[in-house]
Length: 300
Image (cartoon, rainbow, N blue to C red; front, side):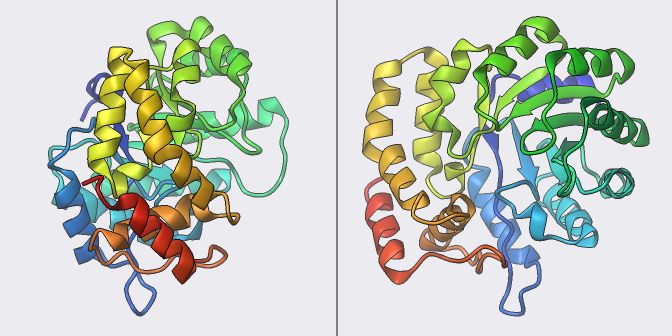
C-alpha cells in the first residue's frame, strides 16, 4: 500500500491495536491471533496496528514482531497492517526492514530504550528509521521520545514517508502546536491509554481519530463511541464513558501495567485464547476478572 493511500485510510477512522496471544509454552500463538483478527474484521476499522503497546511490543523479540507482521498480513490481506517498531536506532532500522519484507504497510515508531536524549538526537533517530524503509512511518510521541512541532516540521520536509504523529503524553499544548504547524501534512492519532477518556479534549486540539484498545474485547462499544465522537454526539460519548469507560478505568488503574493486562483479560473473557501477559506485566486476579466479566456482560 502506497503511503498516501495509507495516510488517507487512517485519517479519521477508528484504529485497532490487537493483543498478541501467547500459548502454553509462552511463545507467540499464530492461530489464536488469526481467529481474533477474523472476529474483529466484522467491525469497521481503518487499520490494524499489530505488535504495538497493547500487543506487548516491548516484550517481543524482533523475529517475533516480523512473524506477527507476516501472520497479520496473511490473515487480513486487504487491511492496512502497521507494526510496532522501536529500540535503539540500528535495531529499529533493521526491524523496519524486516517488517517491510514481511508485508507490513507501515510502522509505529515507539520510543528508544531507557536513556533520555536531546531533541536533535531524537530527530536523528526518526530520520534514520524513515530513510531505512519505504513504508509510512508514524512517530509515537511518548516517554523519553517527545518531539516538538519544530522538529516534526523539519522531519516532514526531509522524510516524505513520515506520515503520522501519535500522542501518548497528554500534553495538549504540544499537540495543538503540532496540528497547527503541520496541518494536513500528517495524520494525527490520539494514543493515551484508554484514549476514549481523552478523545473529546484531543478533538479540540485537532486530532480527529485515535487508537482503541478496548476494541479488542468490546468492539461493539468501541465502534458506537467512535461513531458518536465523529458525529459530535457528546451526549452519547458521555453516556458510554459513565456506563463503561470509567468503570473499566477503575479496574485498569488498580495496578501498573493493567492498561495492557486488562485488555488481554477482556479478550480471554470473550472466548479467545489470548494467553497471559509476559513479565514484567502481571495478569488480573480472580476478583478483578470477575469485575471485568460483570463490566462486559450486556455490552455485546
